[in-house]
Image (tube, chains in turn yellow, cyan):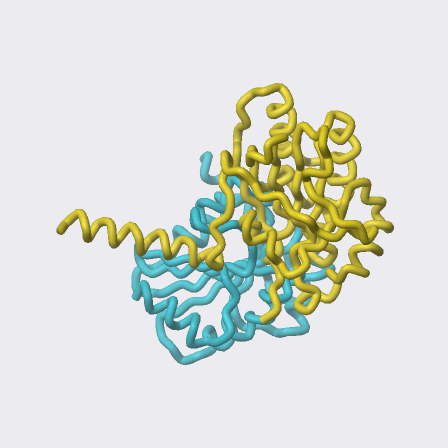
Length: 201
Length: 158
């Protein structure tokens, strides 16, 4: 009986945790991430499987309107430039519903990508089916996957959104380097403040 | 002595805004705010920023709660605005909205080092709210739509 009670309590606490993050549980390191087929800003559908020789995928949920996401745009472009030649493909996904965040419309994505010279696909999570599976809760939110789509790292790009020159730890870059060398990634999960993903009420 | 060094609180005065305390390190914020709570009072600590639309939308609810006649409730609005936008964004916002609720700024940008210390369930998205009463804490990462919702969460630890 005591055990039953304990189990019930554990269940309740699990539920509380899940409800705290809006019912989204999402991936943890070691999980196999889903592939997808989402529309790129050039109108073509893009899947991870399209990049046949990729050694890994840098999936970044990001958007146009969020100041945190905006402050990382140049850094993401630089990352893509540096690591695409090594076989690590950046794929950016806008998870927001434009009905709730007008700046994040498909047209708006095209404009922003051109302005900033995005050198990677910028996909629209039309219908918001993909971000909940990944467990993205905010923008920007990074998921580093290996070639088999096994999640290797989740979280922030680095430890200083406000000032790229004052960054002490490049979490994502360190994770890519470790993955490439076959070393263990540490930390596997980091957190950062970000904008909630916008869902139409 | 070490503690003294950690507390690098300083005051910024603005002609229009009331004085707002900026905490440059989470340790300073923890020591001077989170660890300074009184047992007979309930605390509602809301994390927001001027650039966060849902946060700004729910601010009037916290303001209403703060200005209500309910005894023993203290609301603190913790702005996570960027350091370089305190004067250009935060002050004008506060001047315009004339909030009576206490506002402070936390500019420690090493988020990964402190988010879990607020609550391990926090993903980092805002708005987010922490309730404290004595040694009891309750944390939610969500947007409120009514004062009653906030009051209900507050009562869950009362």
